[in-house]
Amino acid sequence: MESGGRVSLPTRTPPPPMRQVSRRLLLALAVLVATTLTVWLDRGGYKDSADSTVDFLDAAYYATVTLSTTGYGDITPVSDSARLINILVITPLRVLFLIILVGTTLEVLTERTRQQWRIGRWRSTVSDHTVVIGYGTKGRAAVTALLGQGVHKESIVVVDPQQKVVDQASLDGLVGVVGDGTRSETLQRAELPRAARIVVAPERDDTAVLVTLTARQLNKAATVVAAVREDENAPLLRQSGANVVVTSSSSAGRLLGMSILSPHAGAVMEDLLTYGSGLDVSERPVTAAEAGRSPRECEDLVVAVVRGRQVLAYTDPDAAALRPTDRLIVIRDAVHHQV
Image (cartoon, rainbow, N blue to C red; front, side):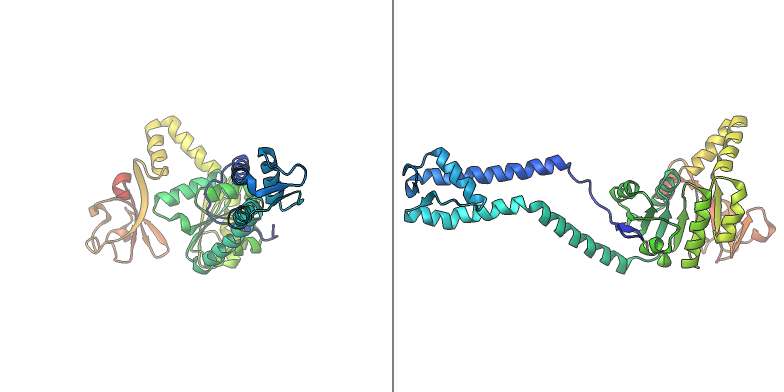
């Protein structure tokens, strides 16, 4: 494996190795049986140097040494029909038998060439995609949320140091890169310089800081969202270039505290955090009909207004009249949203 990481494109679940081997053995056995029957049915056209007759065992022996290209010469075709059958039938069967035996090697070479072509084609077309660095619990949840919001699998690239994790991502239909997310080579293989969004979700906070620094160095314009465990590390992530920092441990603690005092409020918050069911929090542009009106007059429940780089609460006097360039943070029905 290359030091910078290896790219894995989406794949289907391969059949078990024993099933593949068994299938090849059955095909080889079928060719051997067909060759044996062909020789035995025309046994009068063959001569055995030992006793001049060819029985079924001799036919099986001749088929075996012929298909394996050993050819001892003790049993030979002597009639015109036997020689013609050797040319038209047994020789193609011999070639088929050899192809079956070396089929695994040919399959590996063909698959490798096909993969290289697919990777080259992917590199030439990918842009404005999302790179998810770390495919653990947080990374998988982030991908699920992205898919729920309509992001296509083809535009998501997963980076993780563990081969088995990237293999799982490939089975999930995602492009994966095996390697250390703190290394520029790995992130370049994920085409991070051309990405529009970057999710930083490794297991360790110090790793998240290094990944964010490297990602921001390669891509100044992308939106970087990073996850950390401890609140004290959040400022480091922001200084490293993260646009948004999510603190997993304190967020979970706040949700626990809310739920113990008000279980219903906790359930609603959990519903809002679970994309695709119940209620969803989403961002959308202001429509032409909404421009100049109050956020309270919108069809959706508006909780905030994004104006430039500012996020204004819907109660803020500056957000009293919506502008055409504003964006709204709204709560809407998940089913209606998906439709």
